[in-house]
Length: 306
Ligand SMILES: NC(=O)c1ccc[n+]([C@@H]2O[C@H](COP(=O)([O-])OP(=O)(O)OC[C@H]3O[C@@H](n4cnc5c(N)ncnc54)[C@H](OP(=O)(O)O)[C@@H]3O)[C@@H](O)[C@H]2O)c1
Image (cartoon, rainbow, N blue to C red; front, side, top):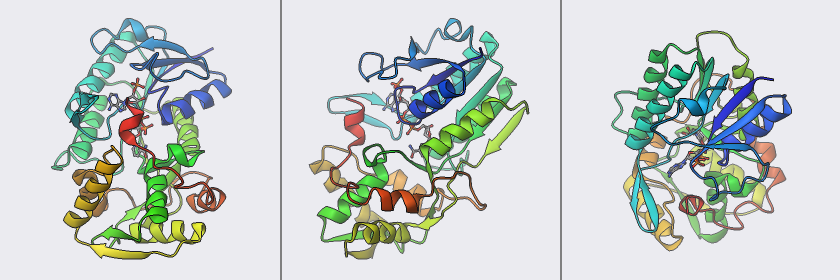
C-alpha cells in the first residue's frame, strides 16, 4: 500500500483530500501543527510537523500533498501571529525535507495567477514557492484553485459570508464595478484532482483547479440573492470604501472579513483564468441546494485558528 502524507489534514481541503485518498486505498498520514486543537474525527495517523526536523517524518512517504498556507498575515489579539513570509519559509523547509527523505511526488496547492512581481504577498509568496518546488527536482503537480466551496455553507467562508451579508444588511456592494471574475470549485472536485495528480509520472504539471462556472463578483451576489429569494441593492463603491465597510463588519464579528490585499487581488482579476476549468459540482446547483441554510450564521476565519 502506498503512503500519502497530507499537510492541513485537519483543515479544510486537506480533510477532503485525506478522505478521498483513504477511499482510493492509500495509507494516509496527516502532518499537522494542530493535533489536540482540531478534532481528528476520522482518526488519521497524525505526525507533528516541526518545521526544523521533517526528514524523518517523511521517510516512509511516497507522495506529499501540501495544503499548508495562511490566508493573510496577522498579529495580535488572542491569536498567535502568522504571516505569508513565515508560510513561505516553512513550506520551503517542507520541500527540502521531502527532497532529503526521497519523496517521489509532491502535489502542491498554489493559487490562480501567482506572480513573483506582485506587490501582494499572497500571490508573490505562491509564485516563490512554485519556483522553489521546481528547484527541488522532485516530480510534482501544482494545483491552482481560485475559491473553494465545501459540503456545508459553514466551511465555505467567503460564499457563506456573502450570503450572511445579504440576509443581514440593507444593501451589499461591489468593489468598483464588480466585473472581475471568480471561478469557485467544490473542494471534493479539488480533492479528486489532487488524487489524480498523485498518480501522475510527469515531472512538472500545472493544473488550473478552477470551477467550470465563471461569475463576476456582481453576478455572484445576484446568484446568491436569487437563490435565497432576497432582493437587495448591489451598490458599486470605491474599493477603499468597501474595504472600510468590511473592516467595520469584521470588527463587530471579531474577524477579518476581507483584507485590503484580498480586495486588490479580486479587483486585479486574479481569481479567474481563461479556460473551461475542472469539476463536476457546479456552484449554481450547490447554492440552490443550500439556499435555506446559507448565511444563517457568520463564519469567522479567525475563530478557526483559536
Ligand atoms: N480555501 C480557498 O477558498 C482557497 C482558494 C484558493 C487557494 N487556496 C489554497 O488552497 C490551500 C488550502 O486551502 P484551505 O482553505 O484548505 O487551507 P486551510 O484549511 O485554511 O489551511 C491549511 C492548513 O494550513 C495551516 N494554517 C492555516 N492557517 C494558519 C495560520 N493562521 N497559522 C498557522 N497555520 C495555519 C493549518 O495547518 P494545521 O492544521 O496543521 O495547523 C491548516 O490546517 C492553500 O494553499 C490555499 O492558499 C484555498
